[in-house]
Image 1 (tube, rainbow, N blue to C red):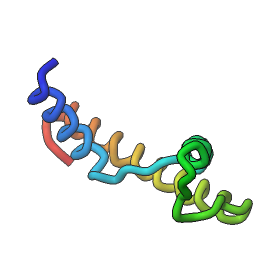
Image 2: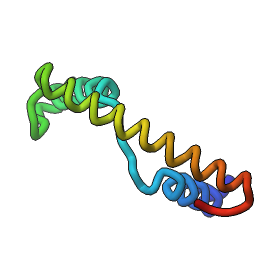
Image 3: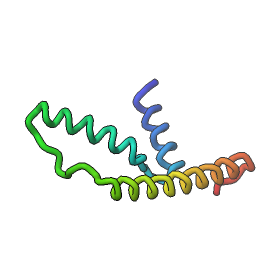
Length: 87
């Protein structure tokens, strides 16, 4: 696959998701702690501390809402594409 093809696929993907990229709280936490471990290895620090339970819960709720909205937009676009027009 060429770089041009990858770029074209990325463009289509981003348009389908309306450039709305979100991450689940659990994924955020996973990579936060991985990065934190690496930062310790390189005697560096990350700019913010770990999330407390309330912050994590809030982040997860917002993420679930955004994910639901994204799925709804995708289904509308998919339905429009199947009918032969854009939504």
